[in-house]
Length: 512
Ligand code: SIN
Image (cartoon, rainbow, N blue to C red):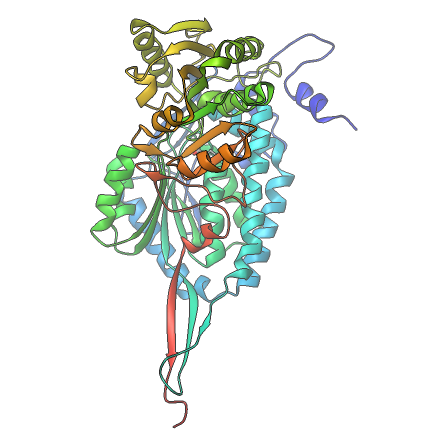
């Protein structure tokens, strides 16, 4: 039996040391289960072809990977109506045990199809095949987590102040959920939202990202194969923003869950307020990554490499500002530059690639603009600094030193492979700088002083803190932010509550 690396090398055409990277057409033609590559919407339990389609690009080559259905307003309305009927007429009444076992079957199918799902994902998103495989396993972990959580949705009995009365609470599914997901995690952001929704007994209407719709369609096919009632999952790819806003305004939708930019999140929250839908928003970040002078510097560099360069710097929880105490700044920079110089930028299917392309040209232009602004204000390029010539959206992993708080990199999420290093004097300065942003998603710091670890973890104004680690994401960990990074929590036991309403039931006059 071949190892994972050998399998990945074979799949990528690397044999006997001769590299032959397949085109995306070749990679797609080698899918073990070609039926997973779907170009249609999934509405009212049927795969629906559309005359109107849009192109999805392969970011490694900027050529068209495939065309997908472009849903309009009528499609969204049909999907919402169908989801509403399915949820009300039968899905809400299924037992949690049934829903849990359906989710477990879906989990098994996702894992069994990891290779194909990873191929589709890496081709449309640009992350490396190895990272894409990792994301499929991460995505599946939310399905198994919520398969278990489904049966743990306990209510309470509460001692009543009224004689002869029993008061209890039950958790009920909130209803139809509008799910709007980002392109940076085409699989995991779908499962992190719809696994708890389905576990709670809700039906979902998904608007996948227009950059990466194919993974969501493949996951849906597997969900239906697993036995989830087809009309409880509807998928409407679209480039028509107006049509998609139906999810935020239609009165039959009772919950919106969105991951994406703060501007769009605010717009959706305003629209959803018209019918007072419950809303969860996982929005932009500007994560501080603080290295104190008592830190284990090798551990800090390892943490920075993971949480800065994962997905080529395109995650909401990526370290955006590397803040290093003056006494260790030179040493940390040297060690980081050494590691960053070893990264290899290239097409996602090349097994030697560690940094895939950014998702689109706009992403490349944004990183360039942030670097130009920083240089004009006194920053210095330590490594990288520019886009990689060629057709793909590649950008060289970059480290900047002498970053200062008047630069765009201090205030805006770059969403690319750029690590600007800011220096600070004291713990109080670091905390002050870290919190000097309207965002509050993730924050990281490295220190060996236990007292400092407790203090700083408390003082950072963020929803998630990594202490001596750059890895904070897991199915069991509550994921979400504070301030303008949004509200609501995904994953963990709290993630299920986002899709439930609490009902109190008072049984009175029991003596009569
Ligand atoms: C995100 O970038 O939105 C998600 C990242 C993660 O789950 O770690």
